[in-house]
Image 1 (spheres, helix red, strand yellow):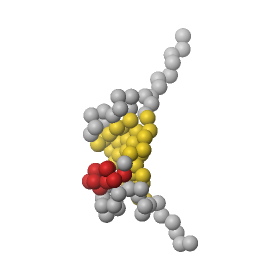
Image 2 (cartoon, rainbow, N blue to C red; image 1 turned 60 degrees about the horizontal axis):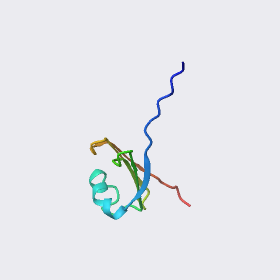
Image 3 (tube, helix red, strand yellow; image 1 turned 180 degrees about the vertical axis):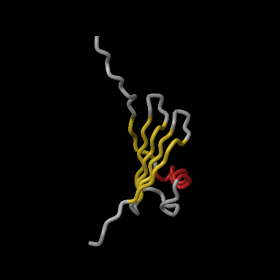
Length: 86
């Protein structure tokens, strides 16, 4: 008898308020000089707990945070998008 492959728990994606989260994101990575991000997307587990957050800024920066089930920050990442002369 074959075993069923384990499925990872699915996460629900939702748009979040950038102005409301600007201060929290600035504390994690001060990449935009205190400016609010253009967009913030959050992923929530089945118990409606935030598990991931991604924020995109107008100056090309992207901040990503991963949270555990208790809401503690487990990892973070920042990346910058650059374009060379036009």
